Image (cartoon, rainbow, N blue to C red; front, side, top):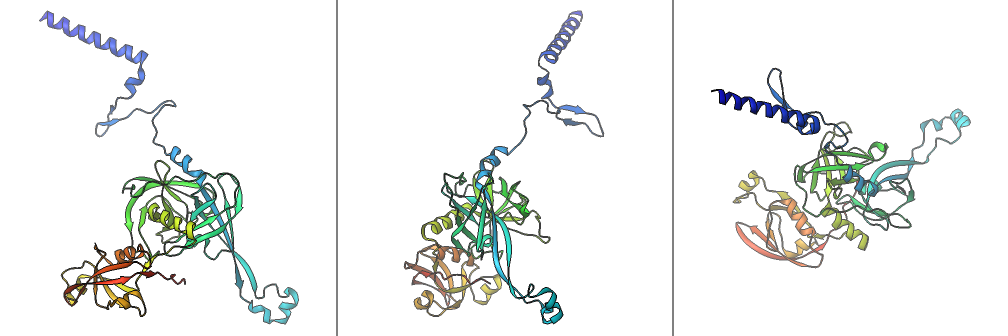
Length: 385
């Protein structure tokens, strides 16, 4: 028994000595260990970080990489002002003349853009520069330039402008297509409300958002990173500072961010941008049909086996579909062997085909499946309100 007691005493003495040495020479080793804090329940609490070497989650490097490539865009437009009703009063006109008469005034707007090429090409939203007769771009370093529109695509709400700059501009780095995942951290960079360049953070809330009624072609990234008026056309970047989208719209009942923002994915933005820079416009395929989603009620009414495909609700005269013999009531099931899930898929698949190309359409008509050949036409411009 005495021997066991001596062994225990020596062990305790050794442990106390080791603890004293560690506490004296390497106290940081002990600070990394969670400690139990008494309270209503015992919880483990991390020690307070100390010193410049503490680990802090930061996206400063990503922001530093992307910030120089995001610009502010200021626009102005000359609009006609109505004749003031008081000008019918001779006494009023005697004192004020025709100052308030019919004339013109300038309306201003603001937005953001992303430098995509060192030689001055800037990607932004179409609605940022729409109808503007003067466009000024302010770079991150404070320099300002007059810009000209290279081309625009209202259907995707994208546009490209260019500034006459000497030397190379800092251009954004594009992230690989389809690299984004739900839950990834993203940063939204722009000029909200004109207060100056701002970075907000969030995550990717959803991918492939459509049927929102914002654009003709919709495949939005949804994010809770704060996007506000003035952010339109700015960059949505990943945690490495690479461009994953172009900020476009928000869902809001107050005009400010409510945690639901939408950005055009980089894959669509890059395709549209390259067409605009190459030709000044975007060319898409078109066949001239009106499409409708197949609901369970419609499927039952038309005696269809399911809701897959798109119902052709109308065919315009003198269009590729009309000349190919497509009829209202047909159900489009496939384009060149590619299965069609819904009406939105038809729009994207047909738009991707070059005008003049022959395409085979798989249809269901009167309970039977048939194939028709159609020559793809060029999609006409979407009328603007």
